[in-house]
Length: 456
Image 1 (spheres, one colour):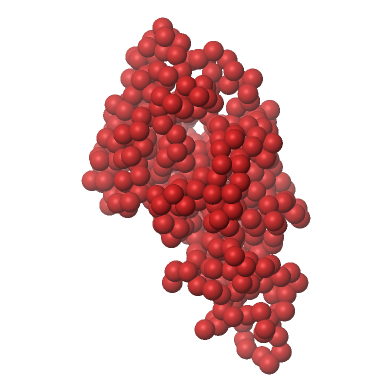
Image 2 (spheres, helix red, strand yellow):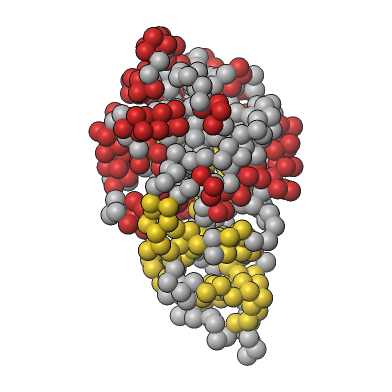
């Protein structure tokens, strides 16, 4: 059946873009239908090719058409750290990897702690972003009492709190500060949960050994579990919704499964794909992340949590550093790796390996983020929704290479890895920005709208 939000006439309807011949993932499941896009929205679904005209026809034969992928955790380093990443390069990598929307993190220079900081990022993104965008406000003792207003600003995706692994005003490792932050605001608050005091107390382990294989020994599962329990308790006391980022341990998953009525959970592709000690022996500091990639028993628990519905979203935690910075002796080497461009290829490879279904992947990368963050008009292919589409070939085999990576840092820990399943075309706001794996057009990203923020 053909559905349209336009009036029916005898003449052919007109669309800016008509996607035809593909297998479309809709709320109904897989459907062999066409999609008409006009003025950035989906205006018709069904057998449309004979009754519609379009400025651009996109043949999706042999491809699956997914709702645009949303990566709700990236670090694009701008302003202040543009020698390792920029908003333009980061979003270019996003669309090449099939990602149509991103939430960017506040640990830039300056930190994103006030309205001026947010507006400076928005100004850059409105000119240079290839995909849609929103920015986290940092939760800090310096701005705690203002967060209820700051989190509602247009273009703000919410408040991000670092309980560990940060610096200056962005580090919130004290319970009194955390209670002040939690008390001022109503939106779901994202948190990096590692216990800073335990990390400091245990750092001598790696300062003595200088072994990269000790990274998950220093930042042990207990450091993550302690912080997660603390912030869940503090948030519960204030009746505040919480989003725990990059959960990496078996113990955390078991604990969080008991708190799903208020707490949502993110996992990352690197925690699902790599395991210790092999990744450190092979890649050295290129596998160094916070929280760390851990042993197989933890990865197995993350996959079980996906199967059981405990996990709500997959975010890349794209956090580039240059190869020169990464080459410093451990533990002076910084934690972080590229990831926004490889998120979807890696997860499609897992789909092909039978670790999750394509519909579950769509839930984790489109419907899930839209649901838990209250994103307007995104997360599903449906009439009236934004025309953000990710077209993938589930059978395509590709080898990931550093020279494919758009990031200013120019590398990926997956260099040389063969993948089955690959993004072919990317549509952002109804315009084709990647066609046949090649960037086309110009940056077309728009500010993401949220249901519970100010309207402009």
